[in-house]
Image 1 (spheres, one colour):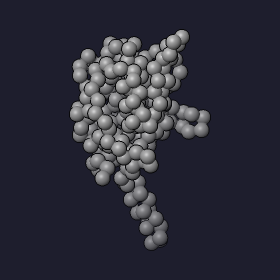
Image 2 (cartoon, one colour; image 1 turned 60 degrees about the horizontal axis):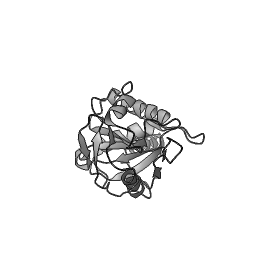
Image 3 (cartoon, rainbow, N blue to C red; image 1 turned 180 degrees about the horizontal axis):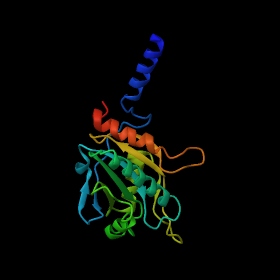
Length: 199
């Protein structure tokens, strides 16, 4: 009987653990300045004090972006249902020469129920977003080349804590080998908000 109670307590405590920094991360998000979906300036300073999920998308994407964006919307729906407040979503265009603020705003107009928590940004050069993705997330980003309108980018979601530290990544869509981990993402965002930045 005592062993059963101890086991239950250990499981409860394990479920209340802090979010750990994934191997290869722990770096501070480098500073950037962009233009959001409302045509306003958005920069790193505005991320301070909130937990963020970051991904890379573009509005002409014919393959991975639609399911990624739907999955991000499902995460925000769950966070909103649970009354979670101090979080933000940042979707960064990898095709900034095509993606205007208006195009980005229209891209999620039927999905975004977050009262301004979901920011979509553009307004930088293709080389800048490629360098930013590589430096901060070890992610490949490449603008469309001649003869195609399709950019290249990864499909991960990235978790950023309240101090701007990159904590971990998640698959942003089902891969056939891994399912999209919606519940894990929601749990990690809530845990970071409740327990504070990763030490």
